[in-house]
Each structure stands twice: as C-alpha cells, then as structure tokens.
Amino acid sequence: MKARRTRRLGLGLLTAAGATVLATLTGGAPSAWAGAAGGEPSNSRGGSGAAAAQRVKADFDGDGKADFAVWRPSSGTWFVLRSSDGGQTIRQYGQVGDVAVPADFDGDGKTDFAVWRPSSGTWFVLRSSDGGQSIQQYGSFANDVAAPADVDGDGRADFVIWRPSNGTWYALRSSDGGQTTQVYGQTGDVAVPADYDGDGKADFAVWRPSNGVWFALRSSDRKESIRQYGQAGDVAVPADYGGDGKADFAVWRPSNGTWFALRSSDDGQSIRQYGQTGDVAVPADFDGDGKADFAVWRPSNGTWYALRSTDGGQTIRQYGQSGDIPV
Ligand SMILES: [Ca+2]
Ligand SMILES: [Ca+2]
Ligand SMILES: [Ca+2]
Ligand SMILES: [Ca+2]
Image (cartoon, rainbow, N blue to C red; front, side, top):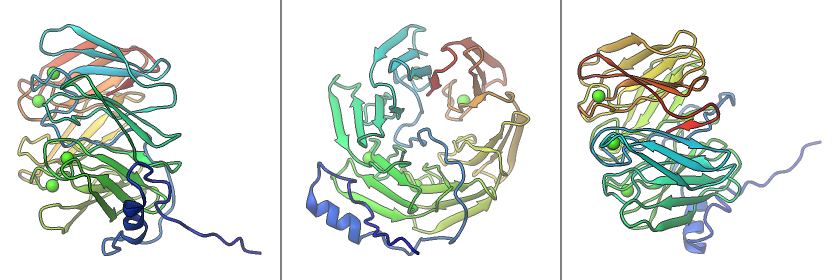
C-alpha cells in the first residue's frame, strides 16, 4: 500500500515576505537546469557555504587578510584574532543548535558575525557597520543548507538556502529584496556557491561526492561548467587559489591531507600535501595577496596552520579549542 504524499515545495520558506513571494516560490523554479536525475542521498556537509560577497573570506577587521576565528557552539561565542593588530574580538552571538554563517552582509568590507537557526530557518546578522541586527526568516526545511553568497553582485552577501531534498536554490537578493530560485543539483550534493566566472556574482554550484563532479551555473552567461575533479571522501574547498578573481574547483583529501586545486587561470593543477587526517580545511587569504592559502585547523589542539602563498612559509597559531567551529 502506497502512502500518498503531497509535496508543497517552498511552503514555510518565507513568513516575513508574505503570500506574494510564496506564490512565486511554489510556482517558479524553472527546471531547465535540473541536471542529472537519480543519484543517492549521501553526506551533505552541514556547515556554511562559501561567501563570495567579500574579497577576503573571514576578514572581520577588514584589512584584506583573513583572520583566525572560531565560533563556539556550546555558548554561541565568536573569537577572532584580528590580523590588523593581533588583538582579539570576543562576542557572544547565536546559541546552541545554530549554524555559523559569517559573511559581509552589509558590504563594508568586514565579515559580520551571523548565524542561521535551523529550528525556525531564521538568519541573525550582527552588522559590523553599525552594530545593529538584521533578522530574517528564510529557509526552514530540515536539512536546508544556509550558504550566504552575493548572487546579485552588489557587494553584500545575500541570504541563500540550498535545499537538498529538491535540489533547489533560494536566494533573497540584497539589492532589491526579490527572490531568485533555481533548480540546480540533487540530493546528496554539497553546496559550493562561489564566483567561478569572475563577474562579481556568486554562481549556484554543487559538488557531487559520489563521483567528484563539479556543476557550476555561471551567472555571466547562464551556461554550465561541469568538471570531474576530486573523488569520494574528499572535501570540496573552492577558493581563488590562482588569484585571477575566479574561484577554482578544489578538494582536500582527509586521508592523506593533500590539496588539489584546478586553477582557472591556466587550467593547471596545484597539488600539495598540507594537513592531516582529522584536520578541518580552512582555505582563505591570510597574507592578503589575493590568493587563497592552503590552511587547516586542528581540533585536537586548536591550532591553525596556514601555508602562505606569498613566500611559501607557514603561519602556525593556536587559537580555539576542541569543539569549536573554525570560520
Ligand atoms: Ca583581517
Ligand atoms: Ca548581494
Ligand atoms: Ca559569477
Ligand atoms: Ca594568500
């Protein structure tokens, strides 16, 4: 006997914006980009996606260099080691059960403390520009993935939700408050929005762990970039390693700590062993030369290890503790 199920895609996604948007949402979502069918559900990384709004990821003090920073889920506390002056910024924002989604939501060049609350699908942003809060309900299904990214290219991160259950992206544009929905990807994929074509707008993109294939829907021409790169067990770590303004397809292999980056600049590869099993890959531009640096955070000792792209040297610093989330 078959259970009959009615699927109401998008219901409950928006409470703040009201019925008009909800109608658009349920009726919209063109399937032109539905991509490959089938596939099996597997692990989708629970963390946040890449933010493309900002030139430098995790730059809380806005000096153009990523800062070592962690979010402590047990107390909802942020700890930032500022690259500008070596001082700390410590701030409680968020609570147990939240997901850390830091990004530059207000467009002042500084990463804002932000969390997404899965229980209600609510975003909480502490704006660095004026210290005020932006609170917005957006997304709410179990297993929704909050992945802030600047899809409209106005320099401010947008609230973006990827829903693995129907392979649909929902973005609330900061530029005009409107919504962009896009079917792209399937259950089991990992959300990896980033600016792969370098037009200043984040592209909807997924990485498929089962076969290591990248799918990116370019914002510039609405065409796809599809490329096999990586394998099952890898962690997708897209970032601009080559410094050409375009995010590169890249993976980190936990089994042996090896980085593989496919440079968009010349289609060459950067392969480097850095880190070990148990580490968390946290690539970012720590030295501020416009190229993402290979970096890991080691939960066992709360230590950051970054391989500087400028001179090939290492920056090693203990910051954070076991149980923290490096951001
Ligand atoms: Ca910084
Ligand atoms: Ca935006
Ligand atoms: Ca783009
Ligand atoms: Ca760098």
